[in-house]
Image (tube, rainbow, N blue to C red; front, side, top):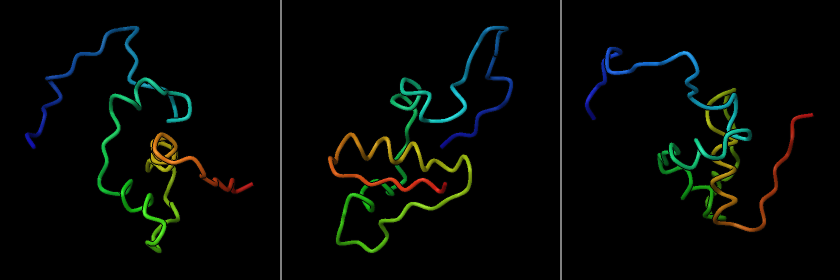
Length: 80
């Protein structure tokens, strides 16, 4: 993949790049989601790697939202 230079991007006064989180930005998520193979792993219930853990901003919510497009019975446990 070619590396893009910062001079290739132009942001104007009212431009937006997306919402703060995937749960708030359905349009951007639909266009920009990139599957690194994690989606197939968590869709396979026989695979023991079916718990999503990661830091803030690592894409956990985006992955769950994408998973909900393919699967019906999804359980999400909130840390609170």
